[in-house]
Image (cartoon, rainbow, N blue to C red):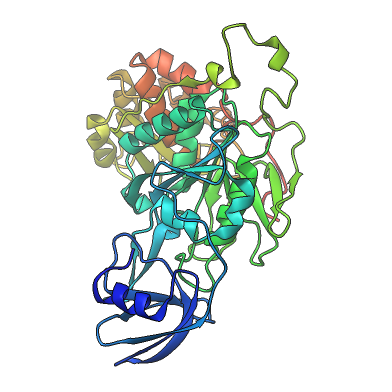
Length: 460
């Protein structure tokens, strides 16, 4: 909402949100579409979308505003927690957590800040109306590098509440840097899902003309209306604006710092691709987890189960005291000994599961076999994951690795991603404290985190 001098100028010109207006100020003459003022923005600042696609903020004081052309009538913004379009049944939910997709240029400094709410995102994307009704709610407003295991717990409960309250699917806007961690966390915390839980984000802030946010959000809403029943990530498939890919939440990684096509499925194919123009879903996995109704299981429900959400299971407890480390030349016994304060440790090992054991001189300060054994003996689970990403661990091939397996390192045969192994250990320690039980939880394939076969064409 505009107020003060800016509101007076707009009322005098008869201009409203969505109209094309001309603004003259001390900084020059500008013409563009009048955009909604962001909730956290300066109430006296006028925001225009220029023909270039970029937004610009103009100080309202001493400015002159002229209406150029009336825009199309747009629906009012829903209140936070409200619903866009239509009635409540058969809705999907949009939860925002922050990140670049919820960011805009802060005009005083020129830097990007997270400031858009779920309501702002929905209001700025009129094409979302085809998927209405959409319930919107802001859960967090933070950059994803600030996300902690406690936030995963809160988000899992929020998702469960939406699904239990009748939403057919949930879209979560999230920063891209740790989106894979959160997707894995929700994959473990939520089981027997009645519908899809889709995370999305953007590589470029929502007010940039080249932003990937509108397409990612649109395709994610299409996925949330699909017959899926898993946690996934939906982002640009390529550098063009043709398709989005939907990835399984435990097997997706951000593999580029800045390109729009940054996300890749590792060791597995994407589940589906979505046409950005038509929003049609093209399944790549015909056997992907689907809604119970899509599998014709609805008739098998117990009489007291009014909806598929009745089967939803939530185990949203994560340890926040797990360490993720990489094996590297120069890793010493002294370094590993310092990990004794953690409840669990994940090591991204080289090759088939190698760390510097120094088989010929295990008394060397560079031999980490003994401190790893001491960690495990003290009740701290030690989990290996492959640095190479593609392929799986095999602790039976080399003599040093057999010694690691003998002392109790977890991970033989697993092809999980290091970050997925880390999240799973956080979750396993939230479910059990007994080392044997934790090992059982870790090695039980869950949500495709451990696959049956390793792909050989992963690096094409």
